[in-house]
Structure formats: structure tokens, C-alpha cells
Amino acid sequence: MLRRLLTIRGARHLALVAGGLVLLGACEDPLGFHALRTGGKVAGADAELATGTADQTIGINAYLWRASLDTFAFMPLNSADPAGGVIVTDWYAPAEAPDERFKANIYITDTAFHANSFRLTLFRQGRDMTGSWVDLPTHEETIRLLESRILERASELRAADKAGG
Image (cartoon, rainbow, N blue to C red; front, side):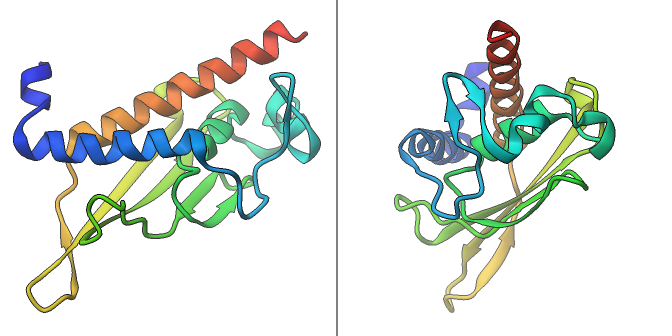
């Protein structure tokens, strides 16, 4: 399966996404959107959301919401609606491939914590010969990798929350 995933084309996209995830660790929150984290717990306005007490009132899973924001923190945020469970990024062009860009829409649809509680749509564009942006197919492997990262991060957040009391 790894060989199939690492085709020349797939390896390039996997490298771009992996590079973005590496950048995620180095990024700060320039918009001030993410809550401050203290001692593994979410503090501030997201505290109620992250503990799960807000799940019933807003209708989404707080861990998936937070994990989605964390996973895509390296991309500019266009809009985020916690009540509706919608996160929309702006276009992001990796420094390694400035003639290619990505945009993501994440929809958190349920209070349950499972893979079917969210949907990720990833858009990809590249420059044509005239320099105009044109739509390109998005590879399913890239989407699955990002979905896995969201689920892993959500599990980490939930475990940290339960460990903290």
C-alpha cells in the first residue's frame, strides 16, 4: 500500500501536505482565533466547547472542531463558524510549489466522536501556461492523510482533557 501511495505524483502531494503539517508546529495563530492552551487544557472562550459541555448546544463535536483548526493552522483561515461546524480556509501555496495552491472546507456534522462526524473537501489549483489558476484533481490519498491527522489530533485532545480531570 505504501508503494501505491508513493507514486511520483502522489509522493509530491504527500510531501506538500507533510511539509504543511511540519509548518503547523512552527506556526502561531496570527488571527488570534485559536484559544490559548494551558497545561494541555483549552482555556478561554473554547474551554466550554473543548470540555464537551457545549456539544449539546452547538451540535458539533468539540474535539473534532479543535483538531480541524489545529491541523489546518498553517493555512490562512477564511471563516470559521463553531455554531454551524464549518471551517473554510483561504488558498495556500506551499513555498516549495508556488504554482500550486490548496483550499480546504471542513464540515463537522455531529456531536459524536467518529470519522463520520466530519467531512473534508480539499481543492487544488495550478497555474496554466498563461499564469491563470485552473482546477486540478485532488488525490484521495492526500484527503485521507489529512482526515487521519484530524482524528489523531482529536484523540490527543480528548485524552488530554480526560487526563486533566
